[in-house]
Image (cartoon, rainbow, N blue to C red; front, side, top):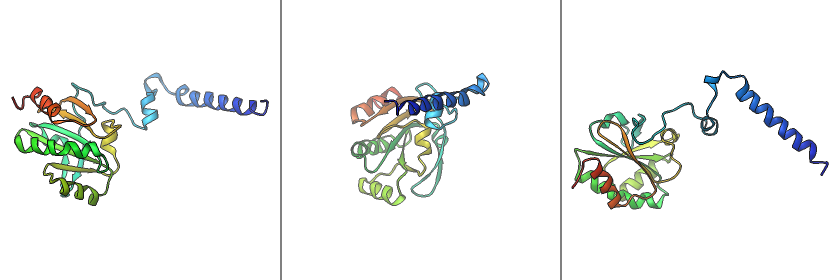
Length: 186
């Protein structure tokens, strides 16, 4: 037991010095948030219902550079997904059907999680998806939207305000309900 005492004492001392270094030499308005320290992010806008959806720019499978702002005036279904995600595969046909049903009013934007263009293209071809699929090679937009699991979807209104965050599989009834709440459908 006595062998561990210097180790435990050293850990406590190191933790105390770390806290002093991180928090002790900063002015009160410079103190970082714990989420910033854990996530390695600066103070970024947190995506929450009623707030403006954070803008971003990514490249589509076709090589076109697109920004979220490009979809202003349409309802946006912003979906974060991966090719290995079974629930992602299950919900994509419903997204495709709604994109075809409301071509002028609904933009489905699927942001892939850091996979190769070839993997993503094979997935898109297999499911015959025609909506915008964007590549996020460094998962920067995933971090911007605090995505922690797949699939995760956000619904954004015509003015760019985030209205819904849905984590997990979204079935057709849920999707239709969200769209109705945003003014699409019966």
